[in-house]
Image (cartoon, rainbow, N blue to C red):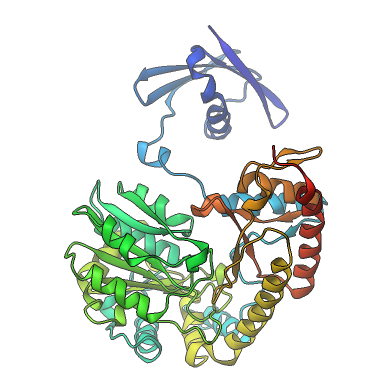
Length: 482
Ligand SMILES: Cc1ncc(COP(=O)(O)O)c(C=O)c1O
């Protein structure tokens, strides 16, 4: 039986026919694929017929026949099982959706993005501009310039108490790349990657891309979303290869106290196969009295820890794309090998700018402390404001620029003209519809009870957002549970 859909591209309408009704659910994917097809093929016919057939399990062929005349394409449009297993980043999707609404004239307040609202400090910008003027515009060594790797080693020694030499550091196009390469470098198919939830959206997907299995360990808001060492101990198996720690945490803002990290280290030490990725990218965005401890600085942990950090968050350099990983040479060389085949060295200009960033002084000096002070004021305001809302539970974040709030009190309620609030996803849709505030559902981070609010926005914007959220929640508070 045939099934077909129509779509437009450059004012041309195409008809796509499916020969097999069982491939109905395939339509949306094909629509997407076909867009790229229409660009990649040089066919300019008014009408195309496409027969889609399952030629063998997991592999599908698409035959594009130009009805009017000459060309015929026979194209295998299947994707690798590896990529099929990966979910796209929900934070990126929601941010894009909110941006599209703003561009369409809807006054949405965007509190979904994980990026500081500040400009990159002027000294860093100048260093970038000078780098271009002075001709630092060529490839750098794959692992990054010696100048920047030396500056990173100095920083890690002075601020984190960890000793590395430049050949134990690889600089990448963002900490995201550093983490992905590390997971690919050390995991074998079937290995387990232990990830405490709530987690940064990319960790489990990166594990899947490496053919490893994410093992998610839940935490609770009443424990400030910190991992229970006993739970960790009970979940380690001979397949456990990596534990990923993130402190300060995205999405919860929790900071692991040194004592808890020491307990975790004692457990890790019993398992020779177990390595740790310590994602410290929010290190400088921390609110006293909380303090940051680098996992690699704990007794016995240097040999098995891959320390990840970067410039995006503390130095407001998200667009410069620069992060790094440090660890034992054996593992770091493997990360470098992957990078050498994927992307090579990071931007020469960004690396010059990063040297200036590290030159700003301890923990980023004055420039960073001004931003941290502003984040802290916003956190205090939000914790107080959301604390006044019925049924909401909060764990006061000690770092980063996110609040991860338990809104599950509102689930199961009927909203007039909207329907039932089922979960974090539908509550976020409701708040976007009714309050025009873009937030990220906790389900994206592995905890459906909560919603993430990024407070990388001015206090005035946050005040407006809180008002809108409170107003949108009023009818729900009195709504019956259904
Ligand atoms: C926890 C965490 N790690 C790593 C990254 C990646 O940062 P980048 O690739 O911009 O350096 C992010 C960015 O959102 C993050 O939140």
